[in-house]
Image (cartoon, rainbow, N blue to C red; front, side, top):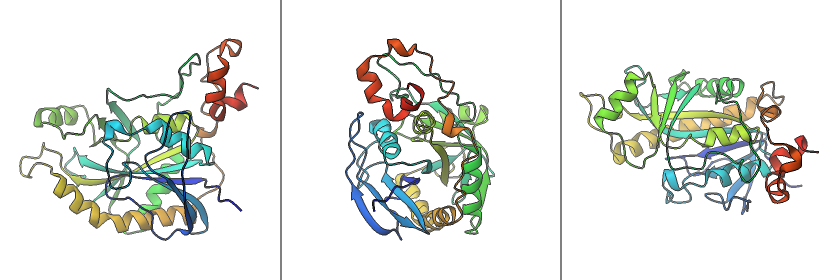
Length: 288
């Protein structure tokens, strides 16, 4: 019997594979939006059917702005995924969020400029609600999973996503702090918004690697420093994911499964046949 994964992990910097998968196999998934970053690896983890996708590709060769976010999310949706844990490296914009700690943010600020942000184009318009862009119910489950590892973890915080691939200037970093942002990264947007359009619960497990560049008593962030922290945190991330898989509440009580119910605005009679076909996986149940 084929594995139908309902839980997926999108691995970011430092987490390029999921250890402990039973019956692991690679799937080369094609989508209407192109190929995902890497083959999707499926298997059983703590009795749960899961999928793993390396966001930056095998060997980390895809820059944040070059990631095909739509293909990644669409591929996971096509496999039956209902929840995604996004693993992210981040810089801290707060004194109390220290390197080595983990943040489960509850808000996003999209400061990117170059990325396709929606599945809906070509004659079908959707205005999705993302007031709370990260699934609160699932985020609490992820928070509990990290807590069980004994690592220091924070629940809540605003995650600003910049275009990258460069790090911030000191002026930018200080502006983001003045805006009330908590952590900074490069890949959760538009990933979270696409997951909402796909009616998938999405939560971020952000690993603090540095104090960005605002902290004058700390050296500016470097790739070497980021990798050092991520290597230390990989075991924590793997164990936290296992905890989430083992204790996953199967019934989704949040609004994510019906996120598109009141979002589609186009008169169904005017939707081009090609667009209907391309987006049938997402909207088929609403256009019957």
